[in-house]
Length: 324
Image: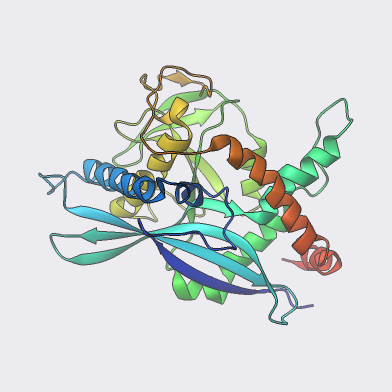
């Protein structure tokens, strides 16, 4: 059996005129912003926050704090399972590009950043709840995350990925409110101070099956650490500007979506446990419907089950069993 599916990559610019396509997961951070009466103001304000944060971190030879701006590209990945031209939307990620207005250079940034996946919605919003329904003790289904992990690794190894991107992806997420993070003595000039968690998590295990390891860093003037999932060597495989592109983009999104953590008025200390009930935080002026986002994750998981998992179940099981 063919060990590779066919991946098709499409991209669209994320600017103040962006409108989500019919195939975009509505729970995706940027898609949620691009809706409602303030959609254009939301996007404009978020992009301004990203640019301001980028220039604050890239402060050398940048006295006025206006040298750089960030361009965002929404990368949508469709997969053709049977080679018959029928594809399913599997992955959506963000790609950063950096404009240096002093040298008039356009610098390629990192792909990954904000990661979303219909199959992950299925795993966490359909498969996992059904497995634990009416059970007295929480447990994880056998092979949980195996298919999703292999699909992701297959995509990163594909010719489609290699033709478009020069470096492996970095995915940046919020820290977990279920863990305690301890500050270490390790400090990076851009990523900031490193933290280590007191335990592993289901999310870490899930991303490990995607071939990704994780480290936690809190950049300068941030309120809390960010989780960076990566392949290879995070600190040496990417330039400072590439890393700043990811930090400025994802920290901005987290300030909007997780203000209790990332827009908190008190900065994380040596020992830190995130608190989603923290009242001592500031809100941005950007409108975001967090409740709707949670409800839609279940709907999108069911969509994946109906249009991908069940129709291709035998093919996917055979492919996953043989995938190396």
